[in-house]
Length: 94
Image 1 (cartoon, one colour):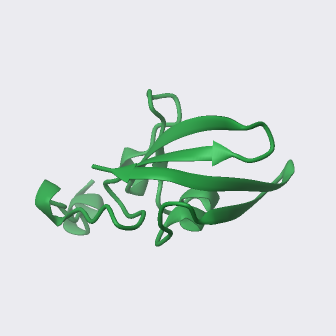
Image 2 (cartoon, one colour):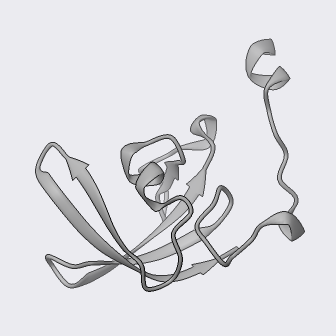
C-alpha cells in the first residue's frame, strides 16, 4: 500500500486537457463495426473498474493505451484477442 501511495499522482480537475484523451477524461467512442457509441472514463491502473457505469479503464490497458493522445474524430485501432477493433472518438470531456 505504501508503494502505491508513494507513486500516486493527483490530477486537479483544472489540469485535465480535453483536447486529447488523457487520464481523467471521459471518452465517447463509436464502434465502427457495430455502429454503437460507448463511453469510458480513462483512469490510473489502481482505479480501473470495467463494471462501473461508465466503465473506468486503465490508461495502461491495451484500449487505454490506444486512446491516449488521440483527438475527436481520430480513428483508433485496438488489437484484441477477438481481432482488430476500430473506434472513432466522438467526444472528450472531464
